[in-house]
Length: 301
Image (cartoon, rainbow, N blue to C red; front, side, top):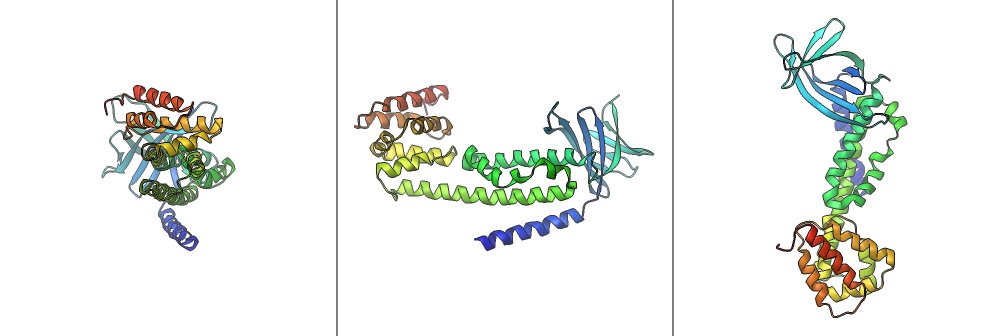
């Protein structure tokens, strides 16, 4: 497995290196207060244009607009929303509308101290957002945070300030690919555990089920596993809950709120009501499930 992972990273790195070699080492950059206009060269006749905004007093950047600009026969770079023309002191950019304001973009090196942290931090935040969007449904927020800590989180501001943009983009891409591989591995492990529970292929003792419940995350697969235990092994589930400490009980109760719409909460309530095991806190579970059902309008599923 380790050899395969190393081979995967090597292939990604070779691809990324070829991507960088094809890029120009310059870009176009303009700034007005906390708004930055950047045009990244795609090839000899086109640019990817982005308007990036920074939060006041904080190094948080996000894209507020963008376009793809392609040079036509007259030498003007045109897109759906913006146009750009070369001037003596740089490039003049404007929106494609009457009396639109104009912005001057200057040629900058990808390694320029003026731009490198802005661009690297923006790219880092964009990649972080994409990573969490990819991970959340499959492995939940806790799993996503774990993957992030093992991959993109290693990039500190000191590295973002001292690495040329295209080099940083390559390094981030490698870590994103590695994060996807880790995410898929975690997902497969969760799916295998769910299949085992569904087939009854697990240690059906209260102590083991308690350990299983305490290890659950907040993904859809974790919610399905919890639902399966309540529906198919109701008495065993309650017996395991009896062994729980107060913090463990509260943590498990909170997981009810991560149930996807596909889970019929009403059936879970019926199963717990029908359990013959007496336990004073069983009613607390049922109350929480009823609250969730009412809040999400699931009574008529």
